[in-house]
Amino acid sequence: NPIFSIDLETVVDAARINNTALEINNTSFSISRKGSIPNCEKLAALIAVKGTPVVIGSDAHISQMVGIFDDALTAIVKAGIPPEQVINSSLDRLLNFLGLDE
Image 1 (tube, rainbow, N blue to C red):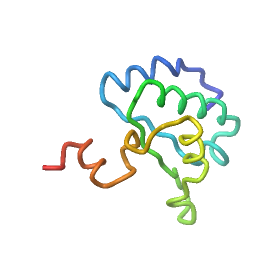
Image 2: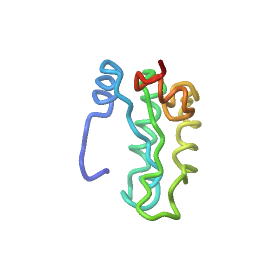
Image 3: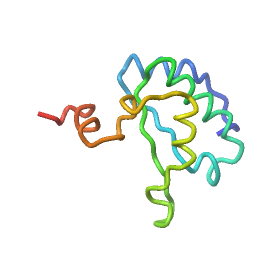
Image 4: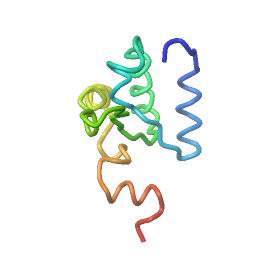
């Protein structure tokens, strides 16, 4: 949200150090947080460079939007985030990240 200024690099570094996944959510590009696109793109670029875990979310507030990730996926591809860095790109990856793969 552009209304609240944060140091994105510090947040991305802290998430990486603490193995905490950050979210790129789809509605930040269109519905829920007007003007957030530049921040989301910068966040995705920093996540890519620093290797921070990331999840993609639809942030759906109505049933018709569940599973719609088009804008978020475009942003991660543009940033160069590889699929193996996206925690919820497969069930195995998600379970491994949560320590539930045994």
